Amino acid sequence: MPTWFHERCCHAMILHLIRHPQPVVEAGICYGRLDLAAENAAEVAARLRAELPPGLPVWSSPLRRCRELAGLLHPQPILDERLAEMDFGAWEGLAWDAIPRTELDAWAADVAGYAPPGGESPRQLQQRALAFVADLREPEAVIVTHAGVIRVLLAAWQGLPASRWTELSFAYGSCTRLVLGS
Image 1 (cartoon, rainbow, N blue to C red):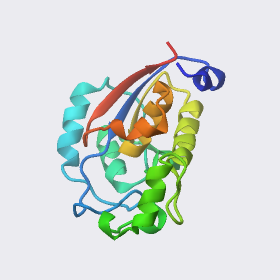
Image 2: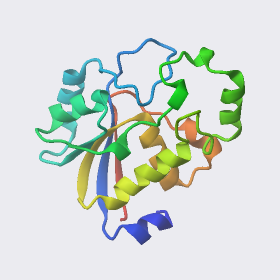
Image 3: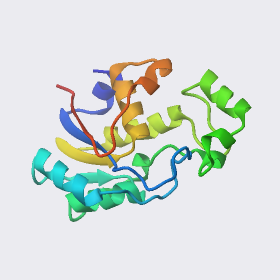
Image 4: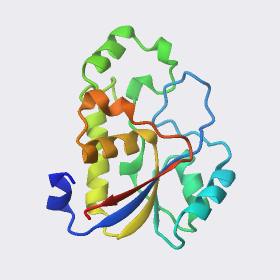
């Protein structure tokens, strides 16, 4: 377990990290903070309810594709901005092939540290996601969020170098269960 967890968290916890259902967006579009609806949220929620322990508190990204699923899992999910997807700034809503090649190359050269114009870097995303977990005081919780958030959390907890972060992938509507601090 990484040192930061022991320094900032004093108890063990179980986290159920859920990626939102597939968003309604054209293939090949860059989206992070775009507030998109999701497909099949009710079906995903029914499947997840059967997998999750009953009565757990649910935290969610405030973005619609997460918020709708969270509302189907719990009557009063707690929304937290720190669980939102990475802000791609000027890239939001553009086709990936419309983003200037020089900017994509700069990102590839510094996967963790590069921020798209007007956006945030994956390292900044990681810092806010880790801060959320450090503030969490529940022994077990459900977190409905985005692949980027789950990826940077797992990368931190596994001690992965930034060059390997993209190796972590999560299916839409999937649940990753983690036991921390044990």
